[in-house]
Length: 315
Image (cartoon, rainbow, N blue to C red; front, top):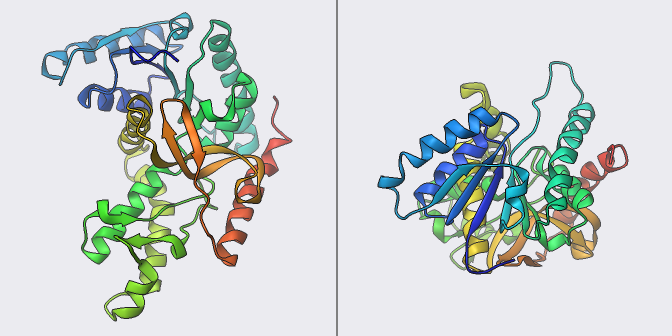
């Protein structure tokens, strides 16, 4: 990966892809951004629209509609493309339609000489990140999914609101599948340096039942948003921007991204949301949490939930 320029290619210019592009423009996330979509006319219009706001942006950025060949010198390719679930369609059928879409994306990008980092946003993100790694043949550290990054941000906001503290001083994670089996390892949650469970025990104004309600609110918040406005895109766009900046700025920041486990947490060959150290090379390392027995069982269940689909994918 070259270190002088900061070039991002966005595949898929729907609401998620363009929310990411807009956040990147406003946060000066890169120097060059190429938009790629099967609907070429739309990408031209989106590029024009973004370019017309450059005069108000924090710095200059080259933005244009392009092709897969433009990925050859990109640092990061962000995949936001995918198909929507049809009425009555099974999750497996949806997955295999998205696998077919990803074959038309990942393989041509690798073929043009792309050697950067894949960042995947398409849902179900853990499985599509797994698919991207299998199709690309890239090392695990260079294939990242958005994972539970946004879920973790939602959690910290709600915990901060509940305890009336700044969310930046809340150190807690949502881990596991970005979906129904995700969970909060409360044994590892801190407010500053104090365990959340201790705060609850020492103050009658707080309760674990309320924290469990927060966990459920985090898990179901996407469905609530979808019912209200048909889709979610602003939050994930900003989460993808956060991951991108951690890469470009070589931050060694800990983010709960979809990562391939190769022995961590006692698991192998499963891509799932865990705290990972993210820097210019991608995933530097995975931070293993000291989970209690109940949390270990929940994590293993989440891994098994994902593995159930691996053997049925048309890879």
